Length: 433
Image (tube, rainbow, N blue to C red):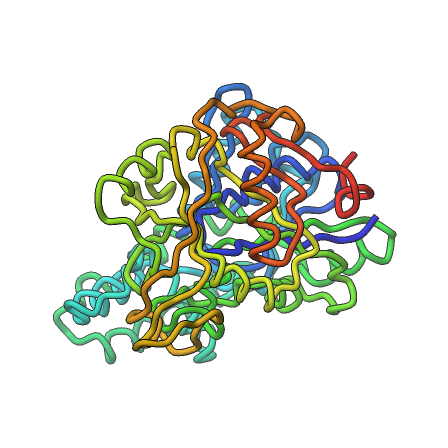
């Protein structure tokens, strides 16, 4: 059975958590390869809502092992809040959950830095979560950050923490000295570091040993392709490599072990934070989608910006990731629509574009060229067989396949794990137990 990378195909929040949870029984090791606790993966099981931020979604399946890879930035407080919640739910973590020693740490000073720098941008704010993710990646690249391996010696951790905090005081200024207290940070984090010791492993070694034993990997990213630090709508992006290629670096495995890629996309489109969004609906239609789709951030509660499906952006995402298949989520959100527009091109300075522009400034000037599809105006929630979908809903899915250039293997028709249509032919034939 092949290894699979699950990738957000839009601007994030596409429903990756549910799809990873759904596919986990077919794999041996579930690995998170990038991002921090700014991303929330929401899973509904038996009517219960579970939101995970750092721990891979596969942890909900007994007997399955999960690894937080070296490409992730880890906030110890956030990790233990999540781990303790799972433990209280009766989910065993010992011997099943592991953290790569090479993963970088988010520290209290990173939250201070992000808040200060985001405020200084004024009207040009990125729209970050102020959880310290960007500054932690910045320190990682600047070769001054702390890693999980530093927690294995509390004395080394204390010394390196003091060095980093001294650097932050020099760069952020004396007015933040009270918030940049290395001693207070150490007292807060040292007990959490001691608790973490049984979970720490050599991440790349663990992943490669699993491959050598013939085990299969399910690799999950956090944000969407269009938020990638290099390929996304810069500077309104996240701080890591979100598309499929990031899995190699963020886990520590050779590219030839990435056998298949599954892109996750909503039946419409959303975005959180600032940045161009050509199909955005700021009026009543967008509000209807937001309320029907519960489009509020799982991590922050912020309302998501909502718009029509953008086939131009999706073709760009497909070109990067070369999706073997797509999962279309939240089809049921469109159940009440009489007509459903789809963006098939952009109008830009009097010309029509069919390709996603590389320049963010150009994207901000683009206006969507829409083709309207007939809605089905009947309930699809809970349907679990493609043939049982209304004919117009089936036609909509086929239209998206043609518009993007990738087949749809999974259709989600509701929040629960079981509210899902699997099309087992082709792509999924040897992936689903």
